[in-house]
Amino acid sequence: MWPNNPVLYEINTWVWLAELGRRAGERITLANVPEDELDRLAGYGFDGLWLMGVWQRSPGGRQVAVDHPGLQGEFRKALPDFSDLDVVGSPYSVYDYRVDEALGGDEGLMAFRHRLRERGLWLMLDFVPNHLAIDHPWRAEHPERLLQGSSESLIRQPANYFETTENGQWRVFAHGRDPSFGGWTDTVQVDYRTPVARRAMADILLDIAERCDGVRCDMAMLVAQDTFLRTWGGAFDPPRAEFWPAAITDLRARHPGFVTLAEVYWDLEWDLQQQGFDYTYDKRLYDRLEEGDALQVRWHLTADVSYQQHLARFIENHDERRAAESLGVERSKAAAVVALTLPGLRLIHEGQPQGRKVKLPVQLGRRPEEPAVAGLENFYRALLAELRHPVYHDGQWLLLEARSKEDAPELHRGLAAHQWRLGSEFRVVVSNL
Image (cartoon, rainbow, N blue to C red; front, side, top):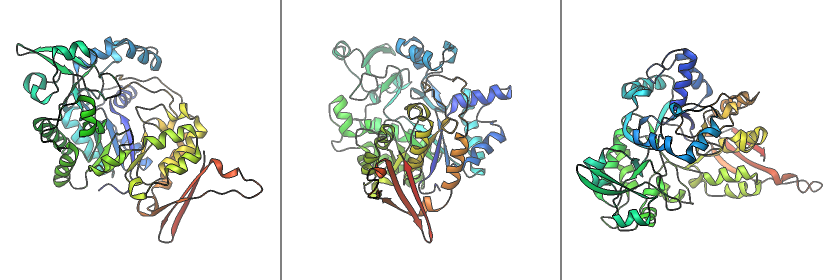
């Protein structure tokens, strides 16, 4: 069973295994990760690992990435010596919910999960509910599960639709997208207005749950009815149907203790918590910590604890800039102390303890070498060692008010402070932002 307020470590699986292989001089997959590497990860004191990007990637999606001029610029910025061989495709353009054979396949994942459990670690994997790979087999086998358009859709919104011929029949499908941007051109949109699509995606979620202990759900708010209809129009069948409440209820009935984490924005965190999610991204806290506005951070933390304990706190992840680059090393330490000691899930990104600064596009399977920042890993090890104390998991949390002495009235303005208490144990956490 996951603890309260767990510490989760996100790993870019493809990149990580490739680096282990280069160091070992042999192919490393999930089936044969060296013992000392697993011991190293367990030694940090994480409660679980999120293996980002284990599912089979799309050949069509990879080709989109190779041919995309904008992505080529991002690739070159992150990895100046990149070649097309470094492009493995987006992990969020899923061709099949089977572990990619390049990473060890389903059997490799099973062995890896067993070895994690021996070390007291839980496993989280991705679920991408909104869309599938652009060349997904459902285009031919189950087009009724996908959102289709017309020739008029293709003319009016060429960035959001594409045409294809499957089994001799011409069709227009929609790319996955959110209502604020154009389509993700390596994807096809699932049509959540239909019961057959909702059931099929719920079955995929149940299948994933057989192989891990939690899921991080990509852009989870996009399939909520209000957001979906704002993006695509039409009507749900039946009219009041929602995907998440039914899917999560079914999931919990079969897998008690399974953890669900929603990537969510637009102030919809509370809505998705009410739809059943254990944890929802706290992007607002991330933004306020990046701005360095302690007053806004303190205001943010006045929300009810019943809401806050279901938030996922972070100062970086694969979608955001690296903390050492966006904040600088010293400010990143102060921000980490705040984010990782609050109630809720505490997320740390691979490379964060070493001070990596390059934000790697998810389509790449290799990253540049970067020197570790002196002393930063020791800081994180000390912080994580402190977080092992039960007071941070089972204690009562309280926001504290920072005040200044009369002779220094501005002294408190940069401070954020809170406390934990469990029986006779208590901790006071103060950070100068």
